[in-house]
Image (cartoon, rainbow, N blue to C red; front, side):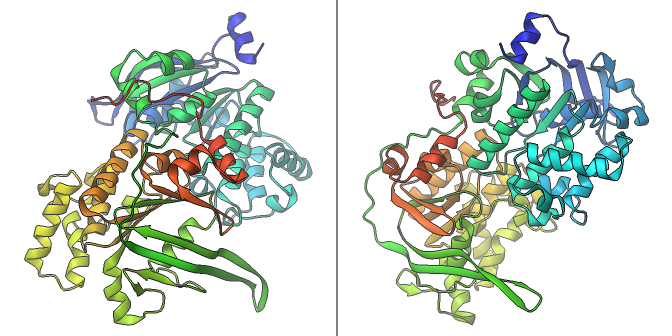
Length: 550
């Protein structure tokens, strides 16, 4: 019998119980960010809180931890009981004592959660020095044991490393160490795997489950991904616009959800089964032959070794085709994209766009050729200048290429209509849009010079599944209307299955497999491709059973 089932069978009290919690803007209780939220988490149980951005998931978790900004948000009603103690009545000193020892949190972005100028070992030791009376030797031994417990290679090297010297998955394991080193009763994980590739995500989820079972920890897992929910949840709390929409077991929520909103979220998870597509025999707009990119790693004057970020990459992209480049972080996907668009100079190359070799041109000739290939990046907020209107951002490239201002403004209005936004929004600024709307604006800006090739580098990985589905549908619609060839960089095979005609799988800078999407995803020839498929969260659940929700 699992720890959770034992707790339920013996009527064990919840570790965390949230009762009618409300959070409002400071100075105006009428504006409720979270309203009357209630749920409980028992020892050994994983409760997933699911919803789109802005649903109140993270605000609820921050309220539990006592981390709400005192100048912006305040709890205006309800109770948060941690082992029977009302956290909302605890003072600052008591909250500091509870954090890490009784409750702990894993944040979404480990690089933001870690101090870049302190070694990993020192940052983990800090928790012990605050909460435990131990010698330096005892703290070091405890940290090394914890690093080994989260399956980090060479714990002594990791102990002395700085965050930038570790991979994304390793940094997230370090954050887990910090959260669990005092064996808290409650662990809150706020989107801890969103930015990770599927294989690393699977490892982190298994690690959290392993440590949970070892210490009988109650886990509150914040996510927008029902694929993750299908793999780890015991119970599910669905939130929308600050309110709880539905609560139930994983099986009940995934198999027979009562609410329309829940069915919409579930049906938004892309299927791993690609739809049949007609062969594309249009003209080739991008041909890459022998593309390589190497880096010399040096320490002072001494060259240590050569890193092959990409090696002997061959690919072709036809007009109106969407080609996905998939693989784990560090596989060379983004390097290939940046070399094609000439944000990086390839070490060996032939990059032909509509018959012209872009790899060898320089200066003004390169400037003119860049009209033919444009790029959409992962983070739309960082891609847009926050100090200028989105209209100015869209027409900037056209003006630089010599388009008259009046013509450029009309082109911007047409593009806003193409991406499903009102033309009057051109006068607004990036912060006045949602994440999905900002990505639509970035797509409009990339399409402004009418490129032959559009490169989308993890363009939907940071978006909610529902917004992600909208942006993917938009890209598919755009390629049909404009016949632009799309090179789609992603680590998510579900996303690739939804819109791509062809898939190229990369690993450690080299091409592993290339072919039609239906062939790669249903009958992969390589073990690495099969491993990526197996790592897809919720692979054995049918998320499309409810069909599209209108």
